[in-house]
Image (cartoon, rainbow, N blue to C red):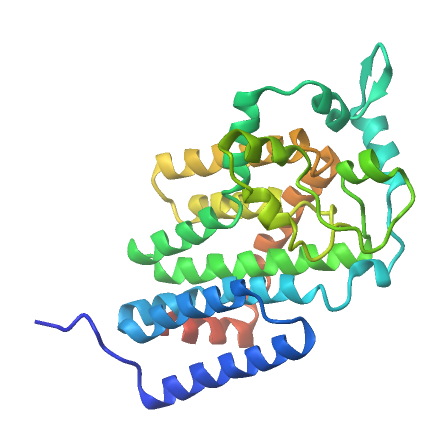
Length: 311
């Protein structure tokens, strides 16, 4: 009977521990170590050192680790230090394109929904928003254990690529979210702390500071364009189509994606424009990987080697 526990080789062990030590040193020196860093490390090392199957899974999940590191390190050089922050122009464009006429004048969808909200919808929006990273990770793990390991790796790489494209957007065009305008007006106040906005109503309903705990660690509030919340589960949906997954999986991912799109606007975290650009970013990232990068000789060969390892 094959043993469940099968440690890595000495070479694999040295590479793994060496890279994590380098990461800890750099994080300590430049951004500061936080509990999340140790949680990510513990999870990865548990998978890596348990057995060969979980070791290959940890390899497929490396792009998610790189995403977390990339997002965290944006604190080192915020996007508002690179380009001017768009506060008023985005607000006015949203009102021109999607404004809702009321007795008090034209309101953005966010402003209208801020005045009209319901406890059940508040609860569901919180549930949808909690899916933004866990669902893509579970989808990646599900593909891996369903025998679609190469597709799992492709998806995780696409997830990382979509994030990097979105991060470039953050630096090219820093933009304030709707809640910022409600609290601070049109003047950019650099270094503004994160805000739960409408998601605070979910925390009140469940009696826990879930989103308060998340948004107090926000790397930068001027990162509304594109809405990567709108992109994450949608990328999983696109790969459920590419991988010909079961119809219920495709429908569930489509439902969660649309729920997040609605929640982003309903809770005043994003404008409709931000959500549309987030969806576009997902299409660009997946298209770039599948139609360009994986068809370019050197990268195609590199991916085939990585795919062969996880298979």
